[in-house]
Length: 85
Image 1 (spheres, one colour):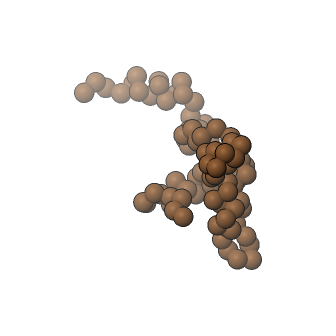
Image 2: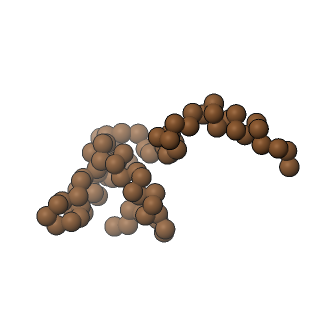
C-alpha cells in the first residue's frame, strides 16, 4: 500500500504527527516501522471504506507556516508591500 506520492518525504515528516494525534499508528520501536494492517485500517476508517464509521473529516491542508508566528494578517500585509509588476 502506498501512502505517499512521489517526492513527499519532507511533507510526510510534517504531517505524520498530526495524523498520529488523530489515531494513526505510531512506529513500533522494536521493529522500526508501522504495522501495515493498522495503517490501512486507519485510512479505511478515515475515508469510510467498507462502511466503517468515519473518525474524522477528510484532511484539510494545514497552515504549516503557522508555527513560525506568521498570522494571516501579517502575510497579507507583506503582499501589500510588494511592488507592482
